[in-house]
Structure formats: C-alpha cells, structure tokens
Figure 1 (cartoon, rainbow, N blue to C red):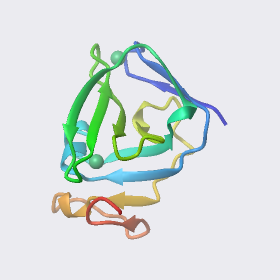
Figure 2: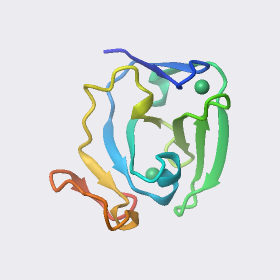
Figure 3: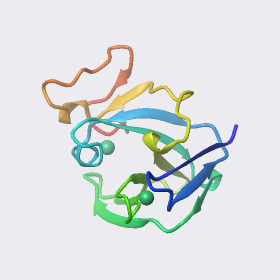
Length: 134
Ligand SMILES: [Zn+2]
Ligand SMILES: [Zn+2]
C-alpha cells in the first residue's frame, strides 16, 4: 500500500511505497523537543521507498552513539518530517503525525523510557527499552 503525507502547510509532500519496518514511540530527549514534550511517534521505513517533493531544511546533531542524526523539517510551517542516522543508511524515520492517514499505524515498541517524565504513561503492552535498542 502506498501512503502519502506532508507538512502542515503543504510545501513538502512525500510518498511512502513500503510498509513500515517498525512503529515506535520515542521518549529520547531530542524527540521531546520535536514532539513538544511528549513522545514522538515514528515509523522506520526503507529509504528507497520514500519520494519527497519540496525542500526540507535540516538540523544535524550527534547522537549518544556517535552517529550523525539529520532531522528534516519544513522551514515555512516548522513541521518535523524525517530523521536519518549515519548508522542506518538503508532506512529512515517518518514522523507519523505527517501521514495523511495514520489510521493503520499502531506503535508496538517504546524506546528511551528512562528519559520519559514521571507522568508519562508507558503502555505495558508495548515492548519497552530504557534507551536506544541495540
Ligand atoms: Zn510546511
Ligand atoms: Zn527520539
């Protein structure tokens, strides 16, 4: 099934032509910025299955692992769209909130629970990792 999505203002659009490899909630400190204090909801997808129209801006940083992280966002409306790691060039992450229809997407894993605030509800039905899974 092909999914479509984009940023809030429509300057950046994308097509995803593969099923997600994983659907994860992420409580890492970085995601708490992008997700405004909550966990981010992310799908890992094959990079080759994603086609982007428009030109996102990037923010590059270094992860605890030493990998270079690139987060892509719309410079017009600020929507966070993608993240990519130098440690996983075959795949990339899409922020689930940018899908036109995310109704078929259900998280099965939660990561970086050790960074979550005390009020966070960690669903016991999810496979949980205190930090980045190996
Ligand atoms: Zn936009
Ligand atoms: Zn994260």
